[in-house]
Image 1 (tube, rainbow, N blue to C red):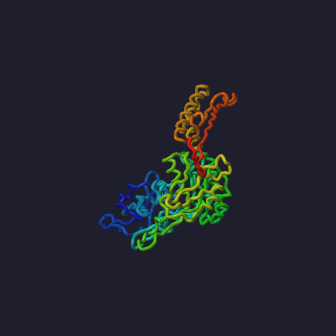
Image 2: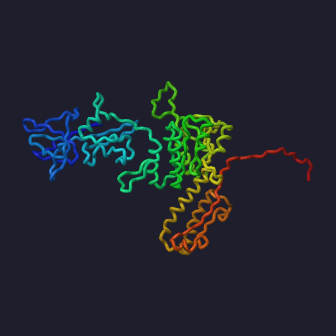
Image 3: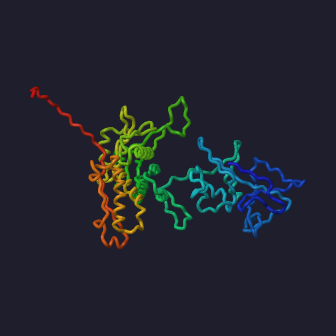
Amino acid sequence: MKWRRSKNIQDGVRLRGVLPGAAVETAALEGNGSAPSMPEDQVPASLKIVEVQNGALGFSDGDGGVDAPTAGQAAFHVTVDVEVHLGDRLDVYAGLELGSEHRRFVGSVLQDIDPADDTALIWLRTPAGQPEPDATAMLAALLTTEAEGTYLTGGSDGGQPGAAELAGQVAELDGLAPATGLAALAEIDDIAIVAMPDTTNMTDLDNAKTAVDALISHCEQQRYRIAIVDPPIESSISQVRAFRSKFDSKYAALYYPWLRIVDPTAPQDPSMPATTLDIPPSGAVAGIYARSDIERGVHKAPANEVVLGITQFVTNVTYAHQGVLNPEGVNALRFFEGRANRVWGARTISSDPEWKYVNVRRLFIYLEHSIDKSTQWAVFEPNNERLWGSIRQTIEDFLITVWRTGALMGTRPEEAFFVRCDRTTMTQNDLDNGRMICLIGVAPTYPAEFVIFRIGQWTADSRRG
């Protein structure tokens, strides 16, 4: 963190080139009337905040009044530059001001709620119950001078968020407080996959369950997204089964075990083994979902897919373990000799057999969302036979394209889907109340989860015909 002074900004008894909220340091003019030279390696002992009164700039007296600049004084505009280093990344916030009235106030630019930079690595937060510090206190609290330079101090990574913080709050109606947590994701329409690995930091499994419930509820309410649930850290086979038994949803899938990777933040010593890090599987699985969607489509089960970039799975899931986990909806991550590390399961955590598979649930999410988006043109159109025919044609054209990708069963479109939108799907009461109802049925393809070959002994007949 660096602070900078500009040249003398006081002309007689007037300030120039600053806005209200700017921080200023004053000093007496030299004997020849020139501005004194201020040492660059010294933090200002006292600062004054510029305010405006009756159209003239002055200095706040701390009691709500404004003092006019004094003749024979020089004034130096003081700003703060913040540099944030993380590995090869460098973020620079230049020209920050120390007065809360200024639009570049350091407390506003680096605030934790709705910051100017959404990707910021640091935030400046005033502890709850304490007033915003004035400029002098702000500078003293932020800076400490060492031999190597000036640094931010007194910071922390913050406390571990609980279930309530992860669930978040919806935005206030007046727009002053933005949405937080999962509620903030609800405002983004195109999210399809949601994971919340912070739940694994909770040592209390009841709190972890509450957080996962919030994640699943979020996906169910939003309708067009699916949740990837992480098992608790260091879970055994019996423990992950017990954890899985607490949930039942067609909008979520659970994967086990955790992954072991080379720690990217640890310094690497060629003479020592690489430092490893255990991480929950949801991040890698979400990436595999996305990769499978791009290469094959959402109708293809995101399983029998290679998990890249890992050292190994923390727990070795065997064939016998798979036989226990799979029927209960726990998707195993397994190592196969000669075939690498793979996702070896594609089930949701639903007890409904119709929604047993992740790809079937996601196929219907894709179809529903696409049809919803592509038929918005029909809103407020005359609700008559002409509109119904146009809607049928639009949806049928889309479903034929989906059927040709292999996402639906049947050798002909008539066997793969049907679309009805006519007098048989709507009553006169529906028409009187502005409702257009379209009935759509599709036959999805299911994954070949169990591939069975039957081999028998056959004796050829030696007789010739």
